[in-house]
Image 1: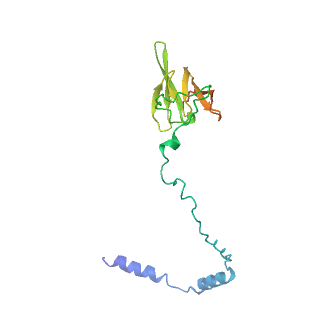
Image 2 (image 1 turned 90 degrees about the horizontal axis):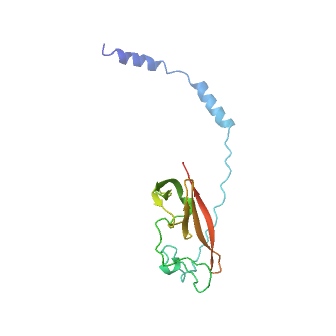
Image 3 (image 1 turned 60 degrees about the vertical axis):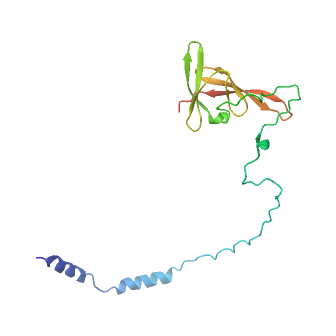
Length: 171
């Protein structure tokens, strides 16, 4: 009984041996008839050395110095200017399009907006607080939107006001 599977396997394998000449003939004729056309490779572009000519400029791999990143405002003009001595708010590092209004909180006659950043943090913001990159000050909070007045530089040293809204988003 132990040898019954072995004997059955040997009989099965002997049935697989046979004449394969028709199969070999088919393979050789198919290979002869169907020759693949492979286009020649393009010539690789010639290497040209680039000489770095900006040794006197700041390296792009080193962070800029503080003087280059600070806001430069000409306060000698008699026009609308942002308050540079004011301490920046926690949401003034985010552009307005990266902020979403998610709801409101109210207590007595005060209403706060719940503002979510693009990294998922939610902050309670009230009237008079700042957000956005352009000195945006919250002027009004309603149940449907937050009205923000931003100071936009006009290029001549003065600033102009622009009103933007953060609409309630329920995504």
